[in-house]
Image (cartoon, rainbow, N blue to C red):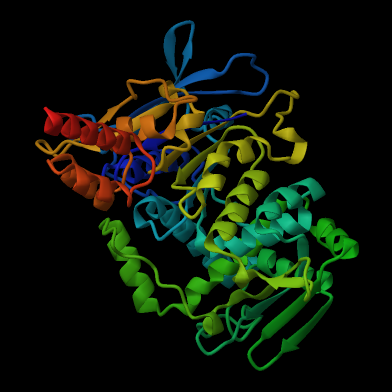
Amino acid sequence: MFEPLCLIGPNGAGKSQFIQVVAEAFQLLLHAAVPSEERAEGNPDLQFVIEYAIPVHGQEAPVHVKATRLAEGRRRPVVKLAKKIAEEWVECDLNDPQTVTLLPTKVIGYTSGANETLSLPFLVSRGGYADEVGRRALDESKGQGAVPDTRLMLIDYGTHLEVLVANLLLGSAEQRVALLEDARVQDLHSFRCIIQLAHSAAPKAPSGRPGTRRRKGIQLTAELESYLNQLQRCATSYHHEPGTDSYAFDFLINGETRKAFASFWSSSLELYAALHKLAMLNDLAIPKTTRERFRRETQQRKFASRLPEPQDEDKVFRFERVVFNASGVHGTVDYVSLSDGEHQMAQLLGTMCMVSFPNALFLLDEPESHFNPQWRVKLLTNVLALPTAGGRRDEQGRAAMQDGILTTHSPFVPSDMPKERVFIFSKNAESGRIDVRHPDLETFGTTFDAILAECFEIRPPISEVSMTKIETLKTSDDPQKIQEGMLELGDSVEKIMLADRVRQLQRQSKQ
């Protein structure tokens, strides 16, 4: 069961900053409890107190947890975790494996644009993972296995094809329909991906001990080498160019292709993770000085900084072409011909399909920003109706609990949620502080007009140019001028009031 909270309010009201802080807090908790998965502290100065309830395997009722990170005196902030037992808080040992069950299985950040604020803790997490991959690639002699995945997972426009392809290859037929029906395409037809390890933009192989350099360009861990081999074995055809150590894999999608992928990856999430790990190598095509500058500015929390995207031809990994089956004269449609809204719908629903296990925490920043009004109305309906693996069930067969926080600027989502789960954010003009409150009215089932008035003080719900025209007509004493102006207006309560104004003026003229 997916039960999100909704943060609504104008731009600059602190909604994105709030979910960024939530992501940073859980990153710090995970870094303290499972440093093998979360290797870096995103915001070492952050202090917080968070209380939440989380289902735990083998217990009927959710466990009430309090997580804190506070500075005591002049000491550095310390992470503590406690659970409530018989109305008493009992501190947990962060080194106890059972403590990890009190933390989210995944923290998924989603942004539809270039939101550096929300992205920051996830990019720090990614950087820690990438550093360990680089060290492992240069020294496989230690015999270490795969690098443990991070628990923080960022989904943005740069990952859209990884999400979509993974779902359309290993998702169920029902899931594929759910992801593509609004885009009016039928299924994945074919795609090509390119991997180039010794391209001119990629770093050269470092000097090292004899036998440690397996490739002349980017060195891969055994895990990444296995993904390369598995893609080759799943491909309909492929070509290898030794000079640049480049691979072109072509896939024509049918039942046998899906069987091949399923023999190596057990779920769409596993396949997505493999593709994303290959895509993270694209950072190596960015000049080292740029990467170091970004790392420094991230540590200094300069939010305007963002790691640039390399040109397609310079990327270590990229999708060169993705084609769908579609009805019509040509019978196929290229991915780039779909709209931003269609891209976003497939990406958002694909993410929810992949992450169908319990205790995932979703942080969604304006997930419906590119949707048309009809799709916005159906957002929660589409998410809750998704056919997910196992029907979002836990090990005991109960509905898998998932929580989320989403931000929005529109009234559509709050109309599907009770006011206890809706928070209005606004910036206090005098103090500069962020004020947060529940709506005074019940939002569930409330009209969009009422929510706009409550959350944005838009009364009436009419745009400014036309409202200025209406206000001008209201002050006129010439009934003929008002009637002529009314001919330009659509139906509204304000137009009815103008008609009443005309009748009053006409009666006064006859007296």
